[in-house]
Length: 246
Image 1 (cartoon, helix red, strand yellow):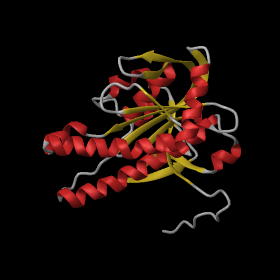
Image 2: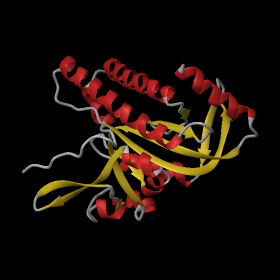
Image 3: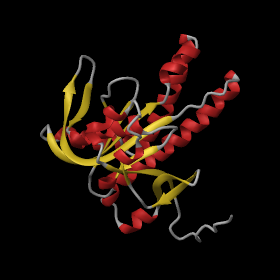
C-alpha cells in the first residue's frame, strides 16, 4: 500500500511539465562519524552496516510517500511534495522521527554483535520551501532533483545536527496549523548553571548554537542567522501535562 501510494505520487509528477515549481519538505540525513566507523570495521562489515541502515530507513521514505533525491556523499536526500489530501510537512517530520528510532535499534543490534561502544547517530535536517523540481536522466534510470536554497540549507542543518538530532527551520514549523504544532515536541537545548535545559516551543539562530571558536563556524555562514529548532518526538495533544519534579 505504501509503495503504491508513492508510485502514484511519482507517476503524477512525471505527467507534469518538468521542471515545475512545487512546495516541498526536504529531508537530508547523514551518518555521524561514518569515516571513523569505516576505519574500525572490515570493508565487508562496513558495507553490510551501511546497506542495512539505508535499506531500513528507505522503508520509511516509502511509507510517507517520500521521493529519493540525489545527494553527494553517503547521506540520503528525500523530498515530500505538497499534494491534495495529505500534509507533506507532517509526513517529513514523521519520517524523520521513524528513521531516528530505526537507527537506534540498529545501533543496539550492532553493539551486541560487535561488542563495541560506538553509537550510530543519524543526523537529520528538515526544511520547507517552494523550488523547481525536475528529473535528471542517468544511464540507468530517472533521478528527481530540486534546485534552490531550501535544499542547500537542509544539507547544512544535517551537518549542524549532532548525536542523532533532528533540526528543522522555523519557517517550516510556521507552516503547520496550531493543532499540528501541538502534536510535536520541539525546542532548543540551553545551558544554565552548569546543566542542560530544554526550552520547549522555542527557536535559536544557528549563530547562537555555535561558539566563535568552533572549527565548523565558517561552514555555516550561509545559514548563520537562520532560526532553527530541534524536533524530539510526536506527542498526544490530549494527554495530561507532564508533572515536573525536583
